[in-house]
Length: 344
Image (cartoon, rainbow, N blue to C red; front, top):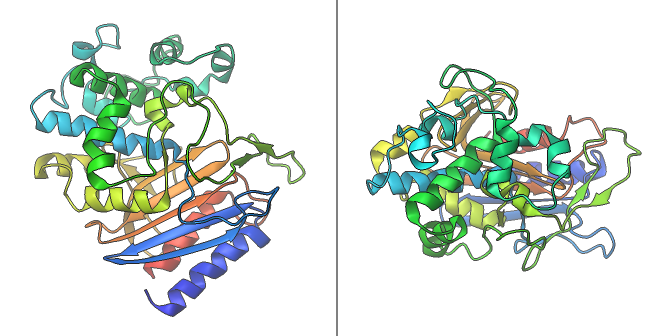
């Protein structure tokens, strides 16, 4: 990377803390065999510890890309077909929805996370209970006739992985992706384990309040079972760059399924200027460049991991706060500026 590029990126990182009010931010860029790491702010507001390349964080919906990759690997082995009806694998699921519709969010199935009162009324969140919450609401549209982001789609996809493979989703992700790629800081928590194991940043949240004076909550420890296959994983910036490098570099899927993954649909009410494929998205940046990857947000942790179409160049950025008090709309605005500075 050019020195003026890294200088511009570091300036944006510093501004995201000094002006936008984020507690901390980290970024790692990978360009072939070269890596560059930048950070600003703190990992822990109490101790003042700075964020490091080893810090783990919750990656939210980037989990979906891991789940989609595992499911498509099972398809490559002939163990299922993306156009299988979901009720072939899950008899009580919504009829006429296919596996592909789950992965590209064209199922119309209600997103259980849109009913927080139902989630708050439960002590634990096994996948079946999340699906029941979704099924208590009408569909947004007939299967295949529209697009709407639904976390329920990936709860069902995770269940299909387990039904097809005959073992836990966490084990399939470890066996097929994290161990072969050496992603030592990446895992799907089991059950309701609230901890982030290994070195990690604290996660700070204002719980969707936009008032600059809103109280800040430490959301580092939480029950991940309510997110599971839709957003429960933990990773590091370097691991995410390695994963997307392998995925975009066509080292995890055969050509036909690789192409299916990037067959995108226009989105509605999601990331600005985005299109969505099978667990993978594209972003059209203000500069006119398109990048590929995924974004994820969970209480106190926002992440973008995007790269060039061939996976040769990658950028992962994470903030350990889910608000901004400055001129940017939210971390998405900051992340978009960082991506644009990187590609331009």
